[in-house]
Length: 359
Image 1 (cartoon, one colour):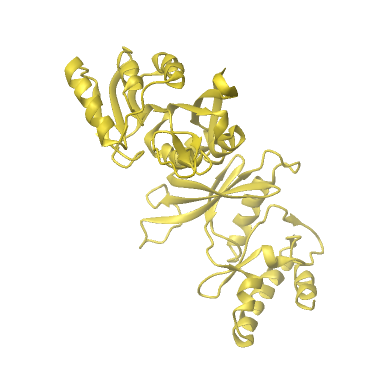
Image 2: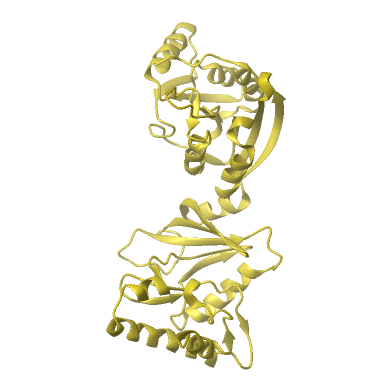
């Protein structure tokens, strides 16, 4: 495999590597090693791990490291983070970012069919290897789709700042971003959440999946499990309905005492962490089951609606519960989405459910 030689983008990124490199540094896709060498020259850097998926690039750069006695640099073969351990203060990534051309294979140039797929893989994994106050130096091209890159960064709970935009020949623009963990991501990880991935965007919230460590605090987790799958809901910044996430946390605490809703584990400003409910939406489940199997489940749903009526809690969504009730693998109905819950003197949860059943 050919080794990617430094181009305009490499030299542009190098300027910022010299400025921001410190502590323990990871240079992903090191290629010729230009960024690793630039980082190692900074007195604030104690170690540089330079990796590349191309064994020829690793061999060639290792020879240069040995020849020039770069004592801070270690060179490894790795597909992104696959052969990397520990956390880093700075991660450098100048990925292949061009959309794939038909019939041409070149791992040093193409970032996937649309150009951003490799970057998406990177940001899905990066948090595990980035220190809480660490920074990512990330370079990409306008040919990659800037809007998609911004979305990928945001969906992985990172924040970013554009350091520079430079126009190259043939109307291509190169961007260098400084990326760091959001306060929310740092807080979730401090509280034992890991492997956080974007799931869906709603009108009022953003939903993520994650894994919660059993050893965090005094969480009400099954003693036989070491970790548990969770859903993480955060406020959608574009929502015009404020405080919906705090409202959901409030009502989950109350309703969990009656075995209604996903189990709440903890919450904070603008986020809630709760049990991940795996299963099928109620209408999909009904289509696949017999009358004898359906009736007991509907009775349980009506019972939950009655309990909420008795508590004077209006869920406000029971006239279209197809989006708000999940049936688990053991035929347990679980209501989800409590952002709009409110206390009222005459709730109509059961009435709405009956009207829905009579359609």
